[in-house]
Image 1 (cartoon, one colour):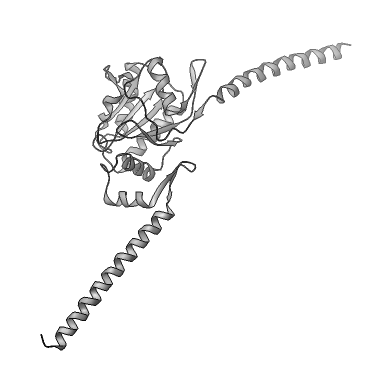
Image 2 (image 1 turned 135 degrees about the vertical axis):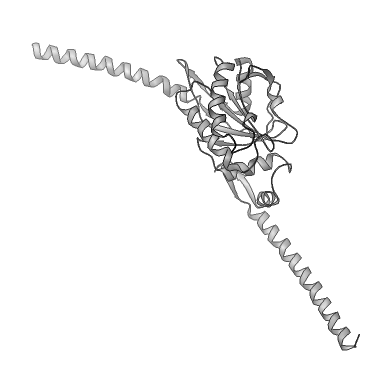
Length: 273
C-alpha cells in the first residue's frame, strides 16, 4: 500500500505544480492579446499633451515640432529590462546612418508610457543614448526624452495605435518608431529594434513635404511608395512608367529639334549662306 500511497501523493503534487504553471502562463497569454500596433497612418496626433523632459521642464509635445521638420517619435519606458534598451540602441545606430542632420532636418522624441518615470529617469537615459550619437548625427540635444502621467500618456499612445499592457510593474509591449509630419500627422511607422536607414530617410523626406532632402530623394519618392504590409518602400510601377514615358517624350522632342537644326544648317550650306 505504501508505494501506491507515495505514488498518488507525487502525482497530486505534480498536478498542483502543473496547475500553478498553467495559471502562470495563462496571464501573459491574455496580456499579449492586448499588445501590438494598429496602423494609424494619415491620422493626427494631438500635440497639446504635456510632459516633463530630461531637464525637468514641463512642455507640450508640440513644442518639439517645427513647421519644417518631421519628428521621429519613440515609445519606450526607462527602466525596461530589455526590449526598450534594444529599441533605443537601434535608434542610436540608425540616426548617424540616415544622412540627415538631427535638429536641422528632423527631431527625435522618446516618450515613456510608464507613469512612474520622471525627469530623473528621463535624464539618465538621455545622457546614455545622446552620448552614443555625439558628433555623428547632428545636434544630439534635439533628441528629447519625456515622461508624464496617464492623462497624457494613454490618449497619446492610443492615437499612435501603440497598445501595451502593465503586468506586475513591467509592461508587455511591441517595439516601433513613428515618423510624424510637422503638423503631427502620422506619416509612417517601422517596427522592430533595427531599422532600414534608407527607408527611414525617405519617410522623413516624404513627411517634410519637400522641405527636407535632395533632388535624388524626391526622384526616388516619385518612383517608390511605402508599402505598409511589407514595412518598406517598393517600386511604384505606374509612376516608373510615367517617368519612362516622359523621358522618352523629351528625348524624341530633343531629337526632332536636333534633326531640324541639322537640316536647316545643311540647307544653308548648300545655298552658300
